[in-house]
Amino acid sequence: MLSCNTSTSAHSTFLLTGFPGLEASQHWVSIPINLICVVSILGNSIILFLIRTEPALQDPMYQLLAMLAASDLGLCASTFPTMVRLFWLGARELPFDLCAAQMFFIHAFTYVESGVLLAMAFDRFIAIRDPLHYATILPHSAVAKVGAAILVRAILLNLPGPILLRRLLFPRVSALSHCYCLHCDLVGLACSDTRTNSLVGLVSILLSLGLDSSLILLSYALILRTVLGIASPGEQLKALNTCVSHLCIVLIFYLPKLGLSVLHRVEKHSYPALAVLMANLHFLVPPFMNPVVYCVKSKQIRQGLLKRFQQKRVDVS
Image 1: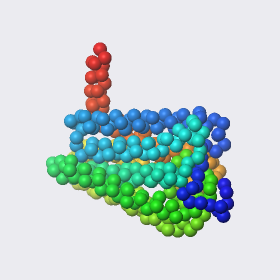
Image 2: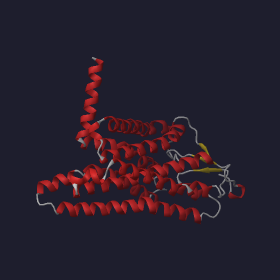
Image 3: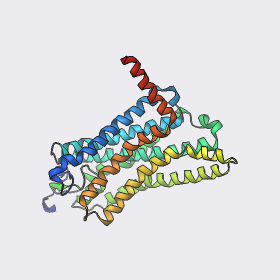
Image 4: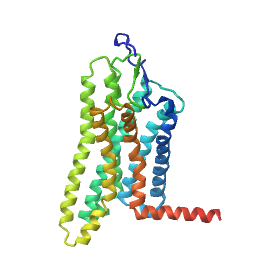
């Protein structure tokens, strides 16, 4: 890396980082990660196809699930190309503009997923609290407006990041901590004053992941209070069972981020390869697990899959 005295801004080049200490076997180590990416893309594409074509999957819950699958596909599309370039082609260099664009899309799709998880928590609360008027309270038009609001919020919160990065000075060649570009990583490599960038990044996280996680907790507190007000234990269990899938994907989304945050503060330098692996998995696990969780827990999705397989078998025979 060159010194900051010879730094430039938009003409900087960033070097992607694979698995430190495992360069010789990097191809083999990356195979499971690449398989997870491919399965994630296939799984979420199938979920989108089923929800679009199956009349039984038109409830607000499934419309929100389609938004979740779309955001997962966007996240895979944002991270997978640089992983392939690094692990299989050995191409580490990434120009500033491409790095900033990838950073924007990674954070934007992450914020979209967080917003959809919040909307799904509200959906479950409405379904349990007022099941008779569920479809009236959440018509398709309302779900579409919620999705549009989530997308607009993600764009507005992430738009200042790349713009403010352009005014910073970077070394001509800088090594990133991961095989993709993140805002905190780029800010840490800058040679000039980054207080404004750090503040904007913090506000962005607080107004997205921080706010969403707090409101999800509030939603589940309201759900629990509503369930405890149901007289029949059997009905209580049935109501809680409708939240299991959503609760699982919330934990899958937030726990890897928490684990990565702890690892970066405690043992990042002692186990650099583990830190890189966790950094990759915390983006790859939610898109991989979300279709699995809903295929296992949703009877309607399983029936839709079975119907498609039976149609394919009839067509072949």
